[in-house]
Amino acid sequence: MEWANDKSKGGVLAHLERLETQMSRSCKNLEDPPRETAESDLGTKIHKLRCLRDKLRAEVKQRQARIKASTANAEPDQTLEISEQEAVGGKEENMKAILQAYRFTGLSGKRTSRGVCVCISTAFEGNLLDSYFVDLVIQKPLRIHHHSVPVFIPLEEISAKYLQTNIQHFLFCLCEYLNAYAGRKYQADQLQRDFAAFLAGPLQRNSLCNLLSFTYKVEPQGRSFPFCARLLYKDLTTTLPTDVTITYQGTDASSTSWEEQRASHENLFFTKPLYQVFTSFARNGERLDMSLVS
Amino acid sequence: MDETVAEFIKRTILKIPMTEMMTILKAWDFLPENQLQTVNFRQRKESLVQDLVLLCESKRASLRDAALLDIICEDVDLFDMERFKSSFEKILRRALKNVTVSFRDAEENAVWIRIAWGTQYRKPNQYKPVYVVYYSQTPYAFTSFCHLKSNTPLLSQALTVASNHHKIVKMDLRSRYLDSLKAIVFKQYNQKFETHNSTMPLQETLELDMHMDSRIIHENKIEKERVQRVTQETFGDYPQPRLEFAQYKLETKFRSDFHGGILAERKEPLRCLIKFSSPHLLEALKSLAPAGIADAPLSPLLTCIPNKGMNYFKIRDK
Image 1 (cartoon, helix red, strand yellow):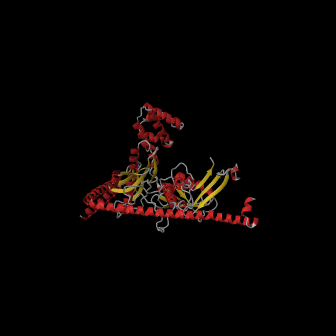
Image 2 (cartoon, chains in turn orange, purple):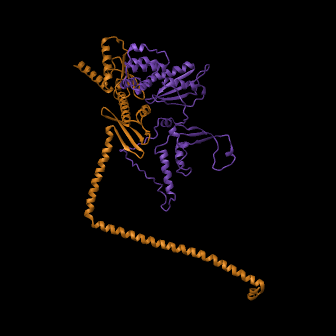
Image 3 (cartoon, helix red, strand yellow):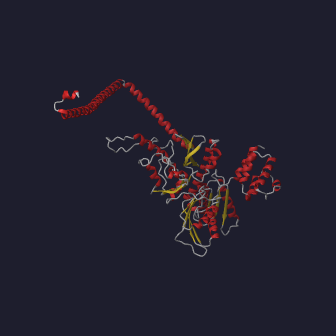
């Protein structure tokens, strides 16, 4: 009770009051400084960062100016650099053009991130036809990621036989099938389009264009009876038929001249592409006309 | 004779149907007529093949002879549309007197078939026909919904026999859009290929929407770019084929990260059906991760739909 007696000026209650005020003052002292110091800390940090940023910006500007000055001084070297650049650019254009032109060889490719994308460009008798793609993933085992080969081409069979063991053979085999298909399709399309006058009915064909069935006349004006032709292409790697059947349903079917014609037509279909056969019919027709005129 | 050649000849002869055996062996012209006559062609195929291989061995067949036989045997599909149509119709009529079958040649390789089914005593119902589209020399046919399920086996048989195949399988793939179904089964949906002739740059920069205010910064730009990249790898750049549904029939045990819980304790598998529907399901799935609704990569059950050619799944615990 010593201190109570020392400090008390108003007894215990007054003492308690004094303690209370002391406590609240010390609490305030504890709170305010942290807030203030935190704020001022951040403030100084921001200030420091701003100064640093300005300094760095100034430095960057200085360096850029220095570079400009040095390049201005070194102008004659710059023009030499430019012409070298142009030369390299020209070579690059050349290479790109060559790579693009590879398409015309029929088999070309481009490296991809996974492997290679092979492009098979089909052609028939000097006409460039559709291109088909096979995107290969180079892994063990080698596999096809995706492709644009039509579904009726036996791609699965060919890849089962050759893809893992002899990729060259795989590509050549696929080229064969696709080129032959493209050639047969081109012949059938051409017949329907350019020689429609010779056809006496619709041309029947299937997806692979390996079975063609049609009726045709030798003269578009149609004084003669039509012939029925049935062409089978059992070898899917060729563009000429393996089986040709020509029948004739006219009244004088037994006459030798018609039999000769029929045989010669069969021979034509076996040996020549369709448009050549029909062009020769047209030419023969012209010759006949000429003979009539003269 | 080399063992591999013998094996090759054996496998090639096994592939020949019995009805064509004699014709093909004669066309091959390796085994002379008198020797062929000593062989019993009425025995079981395996024994017949063994006898023939022995004869080839005695004549010392070479790889070249075997390759020649292979070429002769090559089963080339000479699809004749007229023969298909007549065969198809004949099979249906033989089984069902009251049926209307009509054909229409669509594009060059395809035929549209319309079938109106009747019964033994009732005339065909012309208001509920079934349509079938068949692409020649492909192993696929597309049919419209058939109300009378009882006629499906007959239709399948007619298609199989007329198209010269051995069996037919129903795919779990349905859509209202024939072009999309074609794109999926003929694998025509992913038609972008890298060539030297492409005019578009290959490296497509993944630009986020740049119309936004430049004061707005994308905090998770790296994550957004990752999501874009994964989505592009999964779905590609091409327009997705159009499907309306994906249905999953689950019969699995409940799996949970939390131990315990009522469902986790079930011994029986849960049975439930989950159906996703959308006017354009695959495009909707493609936009899930970029929109932030799902994590990328998406579940393979969703992304395998065009690859596997199915949008109706049955999932059971292995």
